[in-house]
Image (cartoon, rainbow, N blue to C red; front, side, top):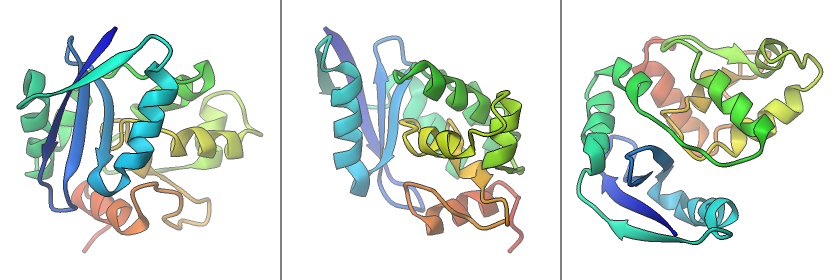
Length: 171
């Protein structure tokens, strides 16, 4: 049975759940108001092998590191380990998201081309939308081809805040 350690931190954008395994690899990072979606994803990915969730304070220092990100240490998220479930295609997209530099964005079509699947922009968007480790796997750095801030499961206002925080959008 998989043991998941969970903590919740306060952020400028609202409470944020942090869920990791016993090796301190992030399995989920989700806004409290979307915890139902997080619970469904955890069930989809881990119900088969069985899992338990245990409250923990700053497991593996992950809570503090995410707090550091919100306090201005933007590079810290590049150091956080993840262990996501999902299909091979989803994991490929999520890995590609981690290569987008802080302060930069790509379009869904550009990301699809990067993956060698130039016609798969919609599939990339769907995988992006099912990312269980928001912020750390920076799905907020993907925007529409016309420059619009579309498709962030945490809400467009949060996406805008994150992009401003990272220096992409100027105040």
